[in-house]
Structures are given as structure tokens and as C-alpha cells.
Image (tube, rainbow, N blue to C red; front, side, top):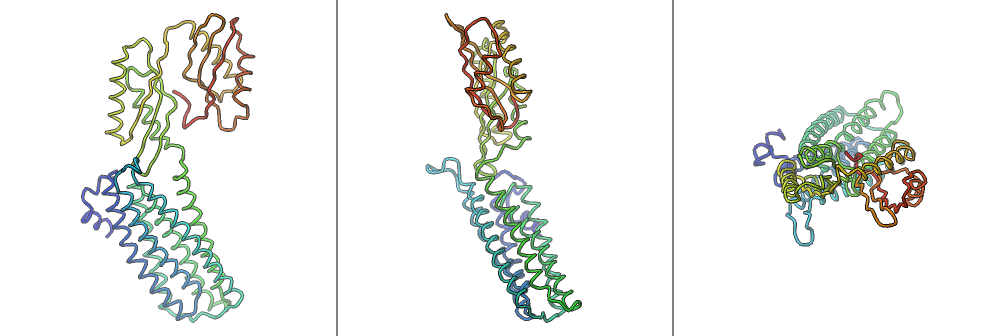
Length: 392
């Protein structure tokens, strides 16, 4: 049904990177979610009051917060679609992450309230009035939430939406929680022991875990994660495929929302090639990446002396040194030498792991102690950490 609604009401629905399409899909999923969650809230809360079950009422309140989350999702999709402006030159797509953050906090608060009520029910148990219509409502709820999990997850993956994935995770948790409530409702009369409060605790723990999982994902998006390896390698390969590019390093990708990406990379080129021809080739790569991958790429050219014997000699010595000192975990790039009257300046960037404990000064001192050239060396090393992979 959701797929039919999307095809009917969302023009160009197959264009997964278009902001207007993402908003339309989010609206459809959100409206369907509001209707279903309000229905589940009303049916479960009324039944919970009739049979005096705290876990069923808590499950119903969970559905009410889900409906509120769907409303937040629709609003955030609308905000995310706003074009870039003077105050927000990179657009508004991160509004989706902020909305997901509030949804996660709301889920955590619900977990706290459910846990509190469940503990009170354990301390002061009251028998549940078993009715078959209660079982019917709970089974129907499980089926509906399973369907919601399937369609939210499907479109979250297709349209790269953290909000729809949050809805999918929440629906999955609801399935598990409602199943626990169903078991409690059916089992308590048979064993003559009130499981309602205990199942409520289980439901609250499931809700807490869902909140943790959602908040962790959203916070990582807001702070900034390492780039997707597949995207990074595709970018590197596209740059390397150009005949003028000898190597790439220092690739950095910045996400300003699911569909807004900026990237920078250093490309090594032959220092003897015609600068205008190389520049035209670099422009062509940037344009191609923007059109085909949707990434705004900026390439910095690093000229290298390919056939210079002095550079090759010093490069070999320092590569040998970093293999020993870094035990195979270091790499260098941007290597160049600047001969002077009294000394030779050696300048390069050194990539070391994040857990490297030696400071830049200590590393330079060890390198100077290892490399013997017969000339006074002025070493200028910039120590940095890998953004994704080692230079290629």
C-alpha cells in the first residue's frame, strides 16, 4: 500500500537523491505512520484500562509517541528541503538529524516512564482481566508494526534517510515489546502469577535500547563519521583514472545531510607537464564527479619531480626509515627536497595511526637519527592521521 501511495503522489519517485522526492516519500511514510499509530494507541490504551494492564497501556503510550515522532519527521523533511541561503550556505538537510535526535530523546523518556510504572506494578500487583479481544488487539498490533518496520526500512535504505530508519528501528522494538506483553497477558492466568509488571520492565529496556541505538547513530552523523569506504574509493579511482594524475592522498569528505556532500583531495601530477593542460584535466574530473556522483569535489594539485635522481635518493632513504620506525604502519606523501647552500630542506607529510603516542618533535628526532646523507638536513614533517585509507 505504501509503495502504491508513493508511486501515485510522489512525482519522479525513482530519483532517490532529489530533495523534493525525499520529502514526498517522508511525508507519505509519516502520514501512514500517524494514522496507524493513533489507531494502535487508542485501541491498546482503552483495552489496557478495561483489563487493568500497565504493560498494555504503556505499549499504547509508546504508539502515541511514535505518532508524535511521525509528525516531527514530516516537519523536518519540509525543513530539510529548504534551499541554501546566506545564513546556511550548505543547505538545511541536517535538520533531519536534529529531528531524529529529539525523537531519540522522546523514546528514552518513554522508556523511563514505562520502567517507573512497571516497578510500581511489581510492588503492588493487581490481576489482569483476561479477555480474548485483548489478545486480538495485541496480535493485530504486532502485524501492523511488522509491516511498518518493513516499509520504513525499505525506504530508509533506498532514500538514505536517518528519520525513516529511526522509525524502522522503533517499529521493530514495538514488535518485540508487544510480543512480550502478549505472552504476559496469556500466561499470567495460567500460572496464577502476575507477569504484567515484569513484562513492562522488559518493554522499557527494549525502549531504552532503541533510544540508545538511535541516538548513537544520529550523534555520529552530527559529529561527523569517517567517509563511506565505497564512496571514498570510487572518488579516488575516478581521480586516478586521469592520465595526468600519478597518485592521490588526503581525501576528505564532508556531509551536510544525506544528499549534500563536499570533498577535497590532493592529486600528484608530473611537475614537468604543461600546467594549463593539467588544470583543464582536473576541472574535467571535478565536473564529472559532481554530475555523476553528486559530490562537490575540489582537487588540489601537488607537482612532483618524477625523474629527479636526488629526490628519488632521499625519498628511498626516508621510506626505509619510516618502515622501520613505524613498523609498517606509517606512510608519507608530498615529498620534496629544497637544496640550499649549507643544508637540504626535506619536506613531507607523514601519516601515522591514531594510537601513535610519539609527538611530532620526537618523530623528527628519530628520523634524523636514522637517516644518514652526509649533508645537514632541515626536516619539516607534518604529522597527520589517515582520513580513510593510506595514500595511493
